[in-house]
Amino acid sequence: MRKIVKISFIVVLVLLSNLLILPYGFSITKFEIKDDFKPFAESKFATINGVRIHYREWNSGKDTVKGNILLIHGFSGSTFSWRKNIDTLVKEGYHVVAADVPPFGYSTKQKRINHSTSSNALVIWKLADSLNTGKWIIAGHSMGAAIAGAMAAMYPDRTENLILVDGTFGGTEKSDKIGFTNWLISSGPIKRLAEVIGRHYFYNHKKFKKLLASAYAQEPDSISVEGYMKPFQQKRMASAILESSRSHEIQTLLLSDIKAPVLVIWGSKDTWIPIETRNNFMNKYPTATFKVIEGAGHCSMETHSDEFNKLIIDFISNKEHH
Image 1 (spheres, rainbow, N blue to C red):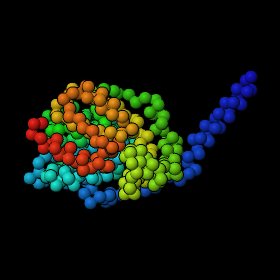
Image 2 (image 1 turned 45 degrees about the horizontal axis):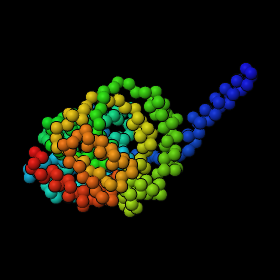
Image 3 (image 1 turned 120 degrees about the horizontal axis):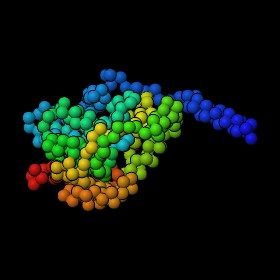
Image 4 (image 1 turned 30 degrees about the vertical axis):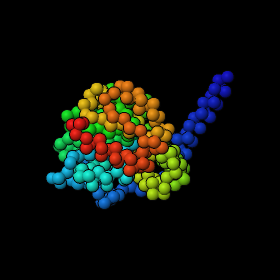
């Protein structure tokens, strides 16, 4: 019996050793952005709390702007996600800023960053402060909606309007510890395996087209597919996403902390976050304005941009909200 146990232990040990070593036998993505790299004409970088943030800015420094608008994308998105909305907001006369939430887009992929909702909210607030110390209209999509809600709860006097797109905010509870599971999945061999899988299986046109078709509830065009895929071709992207599980909330924030007028926009065909989630939020925050875009999936700001842009402009221009 002891011999069987000993042999079994050796077999398991060999298998685990091979599993840990195997990912290092495959190539991974090598592309890494340089200090002078500008993915877009309006691209800028700022280091906030030691975190390098990529953002884009329009109508900065103009005396005639109607207000400040901050756009926060969802999980796996980037500033590219707002490409069909920015021109409308800029032409309406707003100072517009779109930021890449780490580790997505072209923001940092560095290790040991706190990626919790409240920590992200604080970092992006500090970015906003560096650009304008006035009030902000904050719009967030999906994961970005939670960050936008946290920002509005964190500094209610600085938030002019809050716009939540196919996502909601339910509050955060301060915590101090990172769980063992989160530590394990962000270990070196596991992150290397993620890089291998991403490089050889996921980072291709076919996979991203399928992913976007699900999010859009319709077939995406090649521009959309390539725009979402390009940031994922950077070095350490997959491992950085795993690292994002190493998070702990730095502040307790409640839904009741939000004082600004709230607009919630949802796609009727959103299968990623069902509309029931919106209904639950409505029950907790009945003063919010709710709008459904018929036929839209999870990314209504992209697939139904004309209707989406009109809802945004009508809401933020309505003097009854101020």
